[in-house]
Length: 94
Image 1 (cartoon, rainbow, N blue to C red):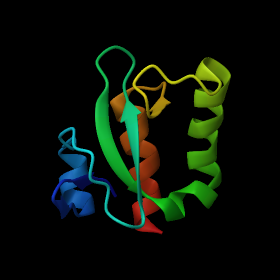
Image 2 (tube, rainbow, N blue to C red; image 1 turned 30 degrees about the vertical axis):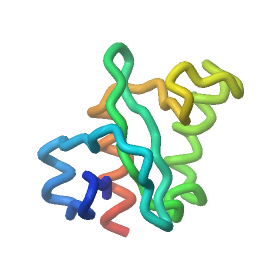
Image 3 (spheres, one colour; image 1 turned 45 degrees about the horizontal axis):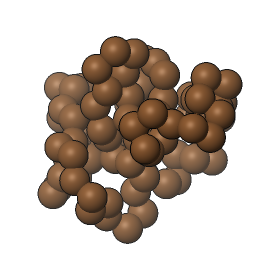
């Protein structure tokens, strides 16, 4: 599940690949991440995803590539949007 500010998107909208506009506001219980290999898009994901092994794999890729120096100023996940949607779509079903 991803979030497009100001409302939470359902998994079917996630499949439509909607990105959140850049805003400083992150609702309680969510984490803002930037996704993409070239152009980065901002998405909000539930913090509950942080405990999931598949999402932790994405976080490990970010750590390997960027360490603690993220170019967007926030957590940047170095994968395609499609790969990100595959992981988050599977997590939203559980």
